[in-house]
Image (cartoon, rainbow, N blue to C red; front, side, top):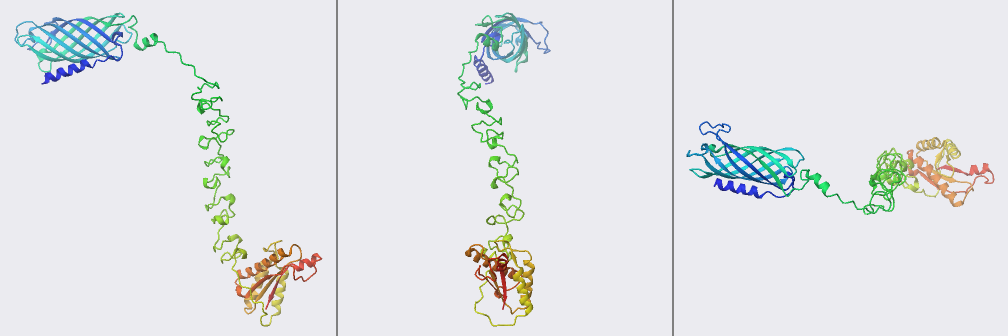
Length: 476
């Protein structure tokens, strides 16, 4: 069984010798002829006595290149063996053997002497009294001497081991010659050099390049405009590595991630899209910062340091009446925008209230208020000493809880009557809302505007117009 498997392996190795490249001795195939000498070990001692029982024979070897530096050799040999290898001791007998060897060699080099190593398997048939087939494993080394490009002298020595019968172990010495089959005059040259010199490379085809930038038109993204290879042959005026045809800012260098546009503040938003190009900001706010994180960019935020509502331009609204605290005359009491954020109060009945005694000091305080309450030009915003004057009115009303107050707004005749009527009403309401914010019940207060319909002096003079622009405080 073991012998059958060994023969199958030997046959498979022999068939594997495929002609991949021609290198052994400068060709695909080679032949070697050698004179061999066999020196068997002594049965008694198991040692070799050099050339003591040397017998001779002949060997012919076929060598087939597999790849560079690796070849397959099939030696066939025959010769005599001494009595040491003959178990019956009947004198010298003969043998025949066939080997399958894998050989590592440098024969493809252009050297005078090239070494090689080999190993493999051998089937050996002995013509002795106990004729049999034995299997050996050769281990050997040799040298090739290049005499001419097509002729080599060859010497080698191998140790042949029998796995089953140590009496068949022996050393084999060989000398002979080898020559390539079908070799040419330059076969001693390395194969890579032969291929280069024997077959000159074809001249490269000249490719069309209309713009002369060294990039063939077939792969040039801009075949009619010269440009570098880094941009596919397209021009790049600002040298930022983004082709002008793809560059949103072709005259300003910028990163490819921003399509060639610069980003001065480094917030990842191109300056061309950045509302605040000198301040790092958020993409959602087009590159602008938002200090209070209320979703309103600082540049648009009326209250940039107070978190507020987008609908109120970033300002807070404590009472939730839709009027920003900064505009709300009553920030802690909900009221309509038309009333500056203060709650509406019902107008008091116009029917005259029952007559009651009004202290003289109360009348004087109200007259003083009429003369000193002031507003910003053309608006209902209280200015100057108005706050302390109205605070005094609130104190008097708290001290006299039975008194009620009617506030009347008046203007001069400057401007349109319609505008003056609206302005006078707004000023009267502004005073009433202030008193409400100081703790006076809205039920005790009423307000009304009369425009320029109730003058107390001539509107022909500046002094008269100044008197007509007033707010009257009437207690009852």
